[in-house]
Image (cartoon, rainbow, N blue to C red; front, side):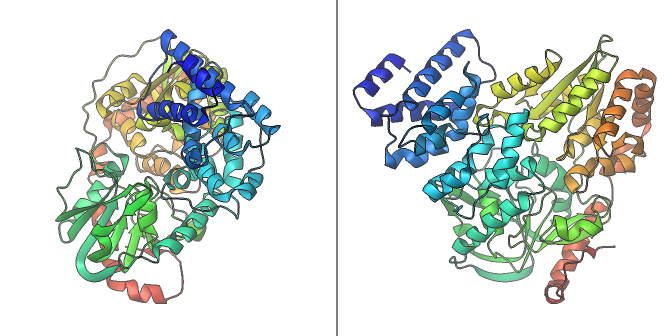
Amino acid sequence: MNTEALLALYQQGEYGDVLKAFLRVFHHFEETRYEDVDGPLQDRIDRFVETFLYIMAKPDFRILEKLAPLAVCYNHIIANLVAMSSFHTTDPQVRMLMRQKGNFVKLLMLYSPQNSIRLDAEHFFATQPVLTSLWYMMTPIARGGGATRTVYENLKHHVASMSDRFIVPDERVAPLYFLSTYFDPDRDRDVKRRLNTQIQQRVDRIRIRNRPNPDSIAIVTAKWFPASAVYRSSHPFIERLARRRQLTLVHLGVPTRDLDKSLFARVCQVVVRDGTAKVDDVLSNDFAMVYFTDVGMNPESVWLSNMRLAPIQAAGYGHPVSTFGSRVDYFIGGADVELVENAQKNYSERLVLIPGLGAHPVYPNYTPRRPSHPDNQIVINCPWGYAKLNYPMVQNLQAIQRRARRTLRFQFLPAWSLANYNATVPFRRELCEAFGQTVTLVANQTYDVYMQWMEKGHLSIDSYPFGGYNTIVDSLHLGRPIVTYEGTRFANRAASALLRRLGLDELIAHNDEEYIEKTVRLVDDDAYRDDLTRRLAAMDLRAMLFDTAEPEAFERAVDFLIEHHESLAQDGTRSPIFIQ
């Protein structure tokens, strides 16, 4: 990017060419991911951001109306690009724009949860509801769960400020739908209900021809490959169904090279292209039941869950959250995890409880190497997706850091999601600001490399309020004790259920203080930590976690729903169904 030429274009009044040049840079940072920023690259980023912000703050610079939607959709890329620069935030420019006329589109481009200024989103919606709805959907996805107090509070405020004027502008609803649970699990239902209601008004115009065959079941997923967390927690269930049923894989999005088609008689595809969902492959079908493994992790799943593809539609713990108002009838969960008294609060679907956890792990494809650990520090694994790290968790970790007598290091392993939208560099900076040099970030690695880093840790700790499942299994497989924080939904009860199954109730915390105390004891008390490690090594984890009868219970649940759905639909209740 030649910033001098860009400034010359601006001075000549070629505002359209200037904006197109900006958009090319944003597209580059959307497609090209940077793990770190060295001296020369930092200088180039700083020069571009300086020029971009200078021109954006000029009162005479205008955004072409036809390019405004695309420009606004880059809000999250702009936020991370500015965070990668030495400027860090757009606060000065937002303050300048607030005093200008004709500032609306430029404000939507620059205003994000990273700003210390808080504007009233309702004014945005009142000005241009469609363009503001685009901004509302895109702006929160840059910063995960909010590792700083400012971002965390802004994200919660963002979820709470969804306007009655909000209009679903296109199919790209997944980021807002998915992340609202991480930002504020008490308000995600409001966001999802509004999205579902509007989507249903659109998809009801689509004609679906369904001639149900009792043996035909569709598995709808974007994550059916071995490295996926969805696959790792659902494969044994789907494998069991494939023994007696004819399964169709409805793959969502562009197929990956490692897509596993082995269990399926047929594979079809649904993909969003150019703002339109291509659903032709499923409009004529013989499905008696459709099972969704990961609603919300991609746009296609949200739209399909609001269509009536089959008489019976169910979801499960692939992504363990209710759809809150879609056309999914049942949610198959685990009796060892769910609080029955919260069933109708936590799910809009009717909860079907099978014995056990309602999820079943695939045995990890990794042989532990048993490396030695340095004596000068204790390494704590934080194997959390970066959306799971929020400001209250940062405060808990800082308390652990202060109270522990031993020198410790937090090792964050957020997997591939961190690479999206160039969040790696800003996230690393936030971690260093919070924990100084006592932090390691291991991101965007293969499963084997991730497990090697996990083995370097002495212990693991779980996140809250959205905890882990596969990461808990990985830690136990490696013989690493893990402290978990129990709540009232599957996402923060799966880990504690796994620990109870192993007789390790002592590692389950129920509040911040317990979480801190239990972790500090594992850090400081070598004998206690070594005893837990030996106890784990002596357990037959394969028998206790992996070779169980839960897949058969899942199959019984599916059989029961197919046989009794008509009577269940007429009984007028949403009380949980127990599968013995």
